[in-house]
Image 1: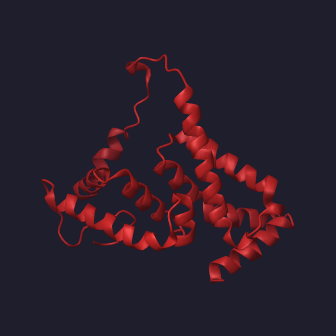
Image 2: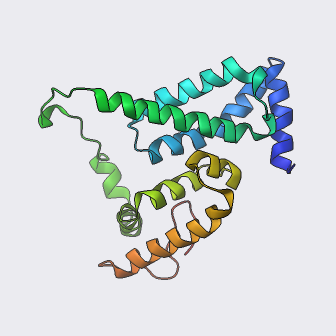
Length: 197
């Protein structure tokens, strides 16, 4: 077991003994990952919040029966993915009666758009040009704190050994899109998540 798994094991044991501080630490550690999974699966803010809340509720209900408490992050990621899929199924059954004018605008407010640097805007335009699989993988890996590869693999339902090579291919594709854009980036461009290319 690695150190994070040992930490998780101890944390889950404290949660099982009804330690409120341990619950706080557990939610602090994994809520961002759950948000990234939800947004990577293209849930809107409300559906994402509902899926996250339901995932935590499932953990409350099943905390004493989790078979591998040291892998609680993977358990949460898998449960979250299932909740996201359920939300997407529910949403696909909804009949929309609104007109386009009634729909809320999901775009950032004008002030936010004006404050972004041109480099950040170009980066995110390039990011949106990636295949959905790459967007989802990079969003999950950008969670704060970053998930382990095992947690990311569980969240994305892909083998652990393919995370690194897939990440490298996705970042290479992102660099290619940025280099081919109207304002090519220099070598100091920032990757999503704060790293440098």
